[in-house]
Amino acid sequence: MTDSTIREFKAAKVAYAAFLALLALGVVLLFLGPWWISRAGLRLCSEFFYMLALAQMWNLMAGYGGLLSIGQQAFIGLGGYCLVYFGLDLGMNPFLTIPLSGLLCGIAALPIGVLMFRLQGAYFAVGTWVVAEVCRLVLANVSTFGGGSGISVTAALQGIPPWLREALTLWSSLVLGIGMTLFVYALLRSRYGLALTAVRDSARAAGSLGVSVRKVQWFVYIVCAVCCGMAGALIFITKLRVTPDAAFSIDWMVAMIFIVVIGGIGTIEGPLIGTLLYFVLREQLSEYGSIYLICVGALTVAVMLWSPKGLWGKLNERYGLWLFPVRRFLKH
Image 1 (tube, rainbow, N blue to C red):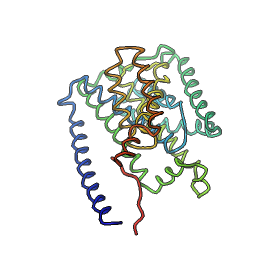
Image 2 (image 1 turned 135 degrees about the horizontal axis):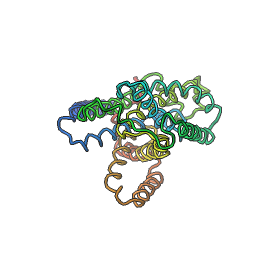
Image 3 (image 1 turned 45 degrees about the horizontal axis):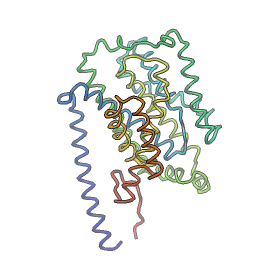
Image 4 (image 1 turned 60 degrees about the horizontal axis):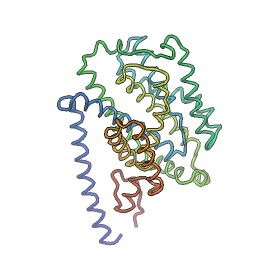
């Protein structure tokens, strides 16, 4: 490398160290949020971070694993009903059901994946959506869980003071959102991440070079199922009622796809930008009803035409910015 390149690299390292320090400070302040953020602010922060976790997982699937799923709401819904079963029927602490819900959704992903991986492309996408609808119809006919009208989980939370419940919800969402972001970053920095990046660029070329594409996709599929299951349990702790239509709603997928496409698919930073923009638009325009949906749709189309790599892709192309650098350089 030339002297100028070395100086630029050192300057970038200093700037990145400053960014990490600010990021750590921000995380600490958020964990202390129950002592200085309003109740409405706490709920908004919780929603932001579990949506970030969902977006990072769909980005991992579609942006790196080459799996264009539109049925991840199946695992969100199953996670919600795991909360009902363990929290209400077995009397467990609702917050302890979050990791357990993720584990069970990961197990459920095994037989579902056996069926789904027999499909490819658009057939895989439609197949995942069909699975989610089947889950919705089955659970809508289970009277133990309230059938189509659903069931309240308020009774499972009665022994927890409201302030503690809101604090635990915030902390759980922070662990989920920040944890999944750092997990994806660590994964892409590892040797396994090279295989993921190769699959993202070209699954056929990666396979010809010895990458086990199917093994990579299986890993990504199960990890995403685990995360969606945990997010599902957390979501319905905040909503206090689980219904089949809400748990398995396609709206979850619409939000994930919007966030990732707007922010930048195939990047870690993209879902961060997309989630922030999603909440800004929702908070500012939701009161306008259908106009809000028109604005969101128009913005999505505009970004896809103007910058197919998303907003972060455009920023990176122009300024060379990276908050989570995963590129590798050859040393001479």
